[in-house]
Image (cartoon, rainbow, N blue to C red; front, side, top):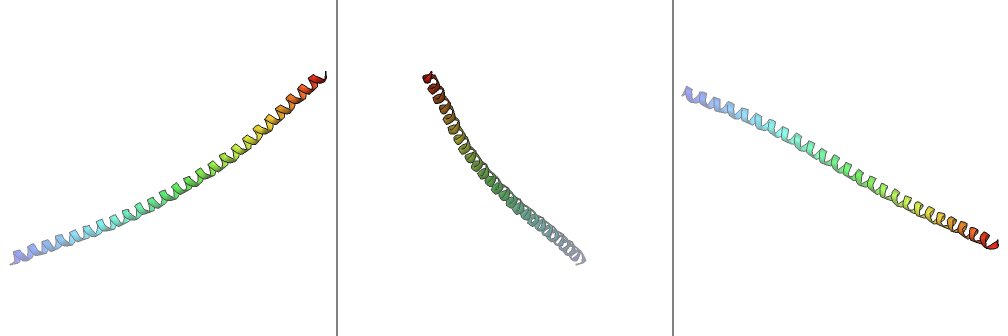
Length: 93
């Protein structure tokens, strides 16, 4: 009978140890899950920031394109005016 009680006590101790290990593993898993959620949130925030930066860059490029186009038209107009001036001055002579 004492042998049976000893075996039951050992099994009880093993069950208690296993329960403690399961609790530790559960705590570790919950911690990892929280870290992964935080990481995903951070990655989403960074991705959204990159999207915003790309939009700003595109807007800036569009604005620069408009300025380049206006400068090109102005330069062509100035060159055309100079050509007309040269032709007029040659025809007067």
